[in-house]
Structures are given as structure tokens and as C-alpha cells.
Amino acid sequence: MKSKTFVDQVEILVRSGKGGDGAMSMRREALVEFGGPDGGDGGRGGDVVLKASEHVNSLLSLYYDPKCFAQDGEPGKGQKMFGKRGRDLVVPVPLGTEAYDVDSGLLVADITEPGQKAIVAKGGAGGYGNVHFKSAVNQAPTEHTPGGPAEERRLRLELKTIADAGLVGFPNAGKSSLLTALSSATPKIANYPFTTLNPVVGTVVYDDFAKIAVADVPGIIEGAAKGVGLGLAFLRHLERSKVLVYVIDMAGTDNREPWRDYEVLKKEVDEYSAVLAERPSLVVANKMDVPEARENLERFVSETGVEPIAITCVRGAEAPGLSADGGLDRFREALREIVKPRTRFHHTHAQAPDLKDMPDTTGDEVPAEAIERFATFLKLEKPKAKSHPSRGNIH
Ligand SMILES: Nc1nc2c(ncn2[C@@H]2O[C@H](COP(=O)(O)OP(=O)(O)OP(=O)(O)O)[C@@H](O)[C@H]2O)c(=O)[nH]1
Ligand SMILES: [Mg+2]
Image (cartoon, rainbow, N blue to C red; front, side, top):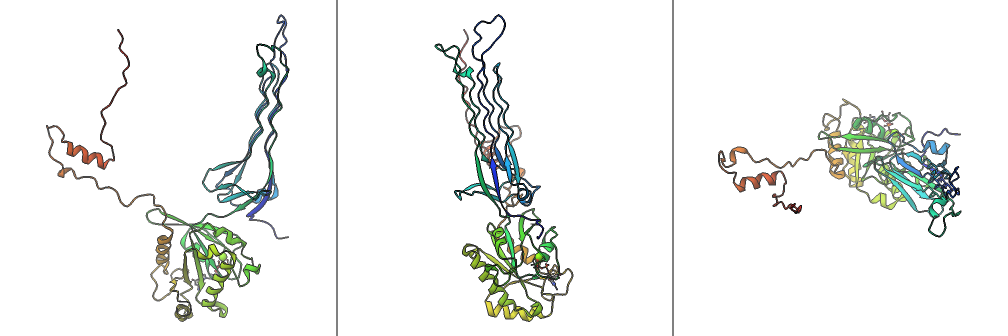
């Protein structure tokens, strides 16, 4: 059996804790004749909670241990003692996990934010002890209620990597090499097909600290939609991306025809999902350092009508017509244009009014106009006349 290292789909059984029963008890003490009820409430059952964790990147541990049970609440006791609350079971899952109820097929949780939590099975409420049922007419009630039931359901968890861009290409096209050149991710690179077996996400960081997450996924070959090669299931990881990047081996290694590669890739993606096929895309001509690539590129343009971004992932390679970093800067900018990442710093700082333009106010009262200009700059509202609520006079 192939050893499992990356699991992106798993079925689990979740069960919350049952609520503890309320207690039935009468106070008994020497010298107290009618002690009355003192049965405490049961504790609440624990919840099962999915929690986004940066430390897990697959659903592997749930594959081996798919039972997620929270603790039951403890029953109440005499002397008005409450039962202890059942402990919640917090299940760490990677960002991008979706949880579906197996029976209804409904989406019950979508974990997309760091630290996000979602209760997927709610603990039963604690029962009431008989202390709650004392009334003027019934001083010694025996009534008490059982704890609420546990909730149990089967969930299908699906991991959909959250990346802004996804690299799509034939095996050996250089997808992992491109991700390595752009980011600090270190996917395996080798001269054989299907080197990449699991999606890897790398982050491209720009000078102004804007970031774009790029996913490298396994290669696609003709017939992948029908399961050939590694199939297409991993394209699920690109469903949330904003742009698909088609990486084409323009060197035509092993007598490949790059223009045909592109058509096949598009056809396979379209068969997987028409929605994904409609996504904005960039086409990258890789391996432009190889002499044959130039001729192939011309033919590619005339066959497909698409003008790809020419690059090489080989550092310092001789690639005529490409900028010093192998054309990667053009690619980075094109990516940025489509993804429009949020930057940490805004370029459009309001210009602070220059002090020498301000009216000279030395010794004078500050003119209203100056106050207003500074207030606008600081985005303050004009101070309103304060109205203190009357505190009432003391006579
Ligand atoms: N000459 C040249 N070789 C390249 C370039 N980019 C990648 N390669 C080589 O092409 C081979 C495949 O590269 P990978 O990055 O592993 O390709 P991949 O698309 O990730 O392949 P899979 O993971 O198998 O789908 C490796 O031997 C790389 O060194 C390039 O720009 N120029
Ligand atoms: Mg690869």
C-alpha cells in the first residue's frame, strides 16, 4: 500500500458529551428537621470544535483516528453541588478545511481564517437538580431532570488549499521550479514526471510586503479527467484561487508540442470544472534558456493566439530577450495585477499640511480655518459642544 503522507479528504465521526443528570437529594443534617431539596444541576456536555491550526497541513491524523468524542458532563450531587462540565474536544484542522454533514450533504463549517473555531457537535445541557423545583406548595420536591442528549454525526472533511494562484502544467514543465524561484517554498524538483504528489503552497512577497500565495499541484496529462496519471482531484485545491497559471515547457522536451500541451491542459481543466476553466489565467512559457524554445514560442503564439510570459527558472542562464532575473519580474507583476493583494502600507498617505503654509498664529487665537485643516488631516470631526447630563443639584 502506498504510504499516506497527505490526506485531503477524510470521513470522521463526531460526538459531543451528554449533559449530566440533575440530582435528587434532600438535605440531612443533625438538628435540621426539614432540610429541603439540595440536589445540584448536572454539568453541560463538551462540544466538538474544529479549530484552524497553522501547525497542521493535512487531515492525516484524522485519517488514522477518525473518532472525535467530547466528554460527558458529570451528574449533579447533593449539597447543591453542580456536576463538572464535560471537556470540549478541540480538533485542529488546516486552513481551508470544509466540513460536510454526510447524511444531509450540507456544509456545516468552512474554516478559512486563522484561529477560527466552529462547533460541529453541541454538548447536551446539564439537567436540573431538585433544588430548582422548590416552591411554596412543594417544600420537598423530588423532581429533577436528566441531562440533554449527546449529538452525533458523520462529517466529511475536505481540504481545499487557500492560495491566490495555482500552477497548472504537464509533469516536468517546471511548476515546482517556478515556485522555488518565486518563494521560499522548497517543493521537490526532479527530472521525472509526477515528482510533486501533494499540493505545496509558497508565498511570493513583494517589496511593499504585499503577499500572494501560490499553489504548486501535481502535473496533469491527457486523460487526467478520466483518472489517467494522478487524475484531477487535486484541482480541488485550486477552486478558491483567483488565477490559474498555465506553465508550458517551451523547450518541447521529449518532442512535446507546447501549443498542444496548452490545449490539452485547458481541455482537462474544463472537463474538471467549467467554473475553474473560466477563471482568469496567465500563460507562462518556461525553459526559455533552451535554444529550441524561441522557435517554439513563435509557433505557440501563431497556433494559440496567446502571448505567454517568457521565463526561465534556471538562475543565471543565458536567455536572450529576458531580463536579468529570467523574466520572473514580469511574471510577478502580471500576477499582482490580477490578484490585487492587500498591502500592509497604503501608498496614498494623506499629505500633511506644511507648517509654513499655515497662518502665523503666534500669540493670536488659532484661526478656525487652521483647526479645520488639521482636523481633516487627522480625520477628526469638529468638536461638538459637550452636553453634560445634569447631575442634579444638592441643596
Ligand atoms: N533548462 C531548464 N530546465 C528547467 C527549467 N525549469 C525546470 N527545469 C527542469 O525541468 C525538470 C522538471 O522540473 P520540476 O520543477 O520538477 O517540474 P514540475 O512541473 O514540478 O514536475 P512534476 O512535479 O513532475 O509535475 C527539472 O529537471 C528541472 O530542473 C528551466 O527554466 N530551464
Ligand atoms: Mg513538481
